[in-house]
Length: 366
Image (cartoon, rainbow, N blue to C red; front, side, top):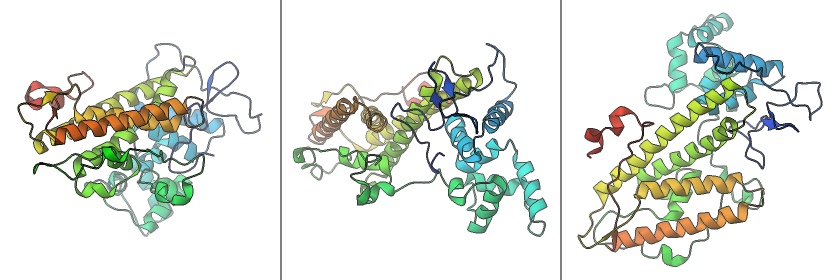
């Protein structure tokens, strides 16, 4: 069973429960009662056959996986990836319910404590400001309706297990140790009264969770943490979308997920670069660098995720070396910026994957 809280992956980077048989078919695991080696595919869809809407697509996937013996937890974990939703929404999707249907079931179970679709919406929006925090009693009742655990409904919230030092030597530990020479961080508290940039060590710490440095650099480090999460999800979505034998509606959902992730990444890079433009003043003599700070942090997040996904393969050593080199190069750039030797360009992404309001010249200042 997939561990609550994240999509488990094998050495190849595939999602737990998503495997390949001897012919390379994408499979969502064996049907109960069949040998573990038997691949079970989603029902084939005629090429080009349209899906009427996303709810129909989710219904098809959920019913097929339930027929194969998959649990609600496993289906919800897959939906979290494909549709980029939180755990509460994912479990409702897995059951093929809308918010009104969940509210109706709630009232049938607990008529003395009626709820409406608005209540369900508030709980699903949380922890966003527009949502409302569900109590433990509410979460317990939702877990009963969705046939899962309370922790399953909170799987999208931050995970700080990497801070436990006992995980350090375990092969499945998520932390990637970066050995950065001391000279790369020795001058990070020096400067000429300008706001300073976070070092690679703080950026990498932010990939795991909220680091101590977030007090000084809240905007770039929050964005860096979200970039790492987006890259992790995109890696998994691409594994599905690139499989030539995958079912059409699963590939389509993965492709939509990738498009949304790319848009979110572009927005996060711009968020970092906008902050840098406001925080750093460059001397006229500084040479122009080829990339923005946001772009370098984005590449660092990619390299970090790659190290994790390849940790059990023969390519891990190369991935780790590239990651360390990029981290050191980032610190060199930060030091040169602080010393006034280099300046970064004012760059804005103009790809069609961006939302029109963000990508327009008026919005970007170009």
